[in-house]
View 1 (tube, protein in one colour):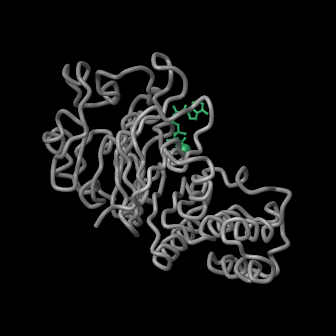
View 2: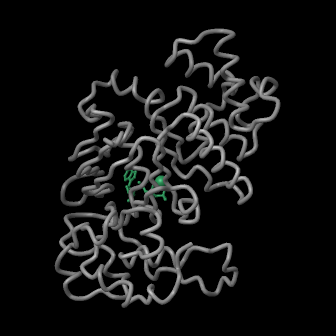
Length: 336
Ligand SMILES: Nc1ncnc2c1ncn2[C@@H]1O[C@H](COP(=O)(O)OP(=O)(O)OP(=O)(O)O)[C@@H](O)[C@H]1O
Ligand SMILES: [Mg+2]
């Protein structure tokens, strides 16, 4: 079946060719109808910029400098401003990383939901209000009809996130991009929010791009995973493949530094040494090499392309075939 979203060779840069940050550097992926793609990586790896570029919300000095984005046969990058505004919210929706900046503090929650229903669906008055109540109850907000008149600051963090989700799915989008939807929340609330997303996805048949730095979140949610490092996808494949037999040393590092519920002895967690560098300038080397335990001279001379290592599994490492042995992942179950 044809994917609903096909991103090919996407490049987003902040600043100029020489000294600008290559926030997204030749990124390609697809998302099938109703499928969940988990996008993971450390801070600054380009996850949000990738998500924002899908609905053309990259702000200056950033811009898309290459590649294509096909959404259900339509070219997102070629759309006029009014066409993309029509797609946003109605067909592709996004839950933004910072809920406080995306809810309007001076409008009631009811007003914010009915507004999108009016603008995008042409719903008015009682019908819009009834739908707003329905949406709030769908995301688990108790006594929704009483909460319509409340302002964002009347809600706790978890409840605000539910409101954000209600607004994002108000028009039953076919693709929802959720950028760190649970990061600021405690673990119990996190699980509830993820459950809500799963249920909505089932109900509306939406595809979901779930952006998170937390591998534990994608483990239970995603069908497929893309791991980003320095603006690139460095590993991609089915969730099972990537978790059971990671082929990129960076992914191994991420897995080893993620706490597991079944492995409470925290001292077995090993952080990845060093810090990620901002992807500036052309890279004719592996950007992860300075932090990699198995890097060789070749890694400093040549950037490894993202290549197929197994069916439905790609990795950008010159030594992908040797990773299980060299990093002892074959003898140790590190998957979550
Ligand atoms: N407005 C901006 N101006 C300049 N550089 C930017 C801007 N927004 C993002 N960048 C750069 O783009 C790169 C990718 O940023 P992005 O926000 O996509 O990271 P992220 O993976 O979402 O990180 P986090 O986990 O912290 O949310 C970073 O190096 C960042 O510095
Ligand atoms: Mg981000």
